[in-house]
Image 1: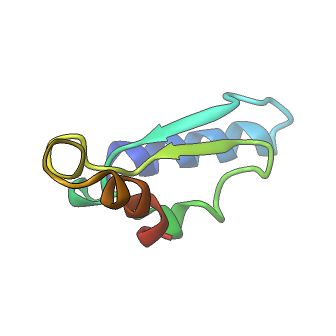
Image 2: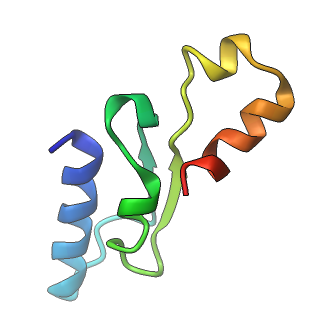
Length: 75
């Protein structure tokens, strides 16, 4: 279990007890083991997921088009 998964589980647990923990979660990139498609159905509908893009690979070396496409590819 990675930090992204732990945060999602904590947000879901608090929400199920009637306490909203966060409005948004910023997730690590897929190369760290965070798979957005697996986590997006586990957070409350009111919580926004952001991130899941590699700042050290995609953002530094790929085109603007690839940067925009990477989060979509993760779903």
